[in-house]
Image (cartoon, rainbow, N blue to C red):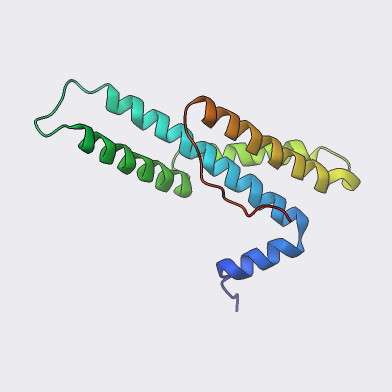
Length: 137
């Protein structure tokens, strides 16, 4: 029988295996990138509306933005567009092309590069993402 891993068990397993930890970092960065892309797309679609509604106000627009953000996050977690999976596959493949001795370092570098690119793109777009990992000690 296969036991289902709880989040704590997954975190413990990732802590013992550096390759799995790097894979988790890469997956998190790819999902965050897809969420930012979806937020931008939903925001552009919302701005393209034909006019203001009767009940539109600054407050309703703020709540609509928050709802759009949550919708984008949920869509990214479910992989609706598949962008995260494509990024993850591409970056994992790029890291896998390196020799066996340097694979862990290359995967970590690829994950760090993806995170850096994501942070750069989001800060340029005016977004800030919550931290998904604990600071290294």
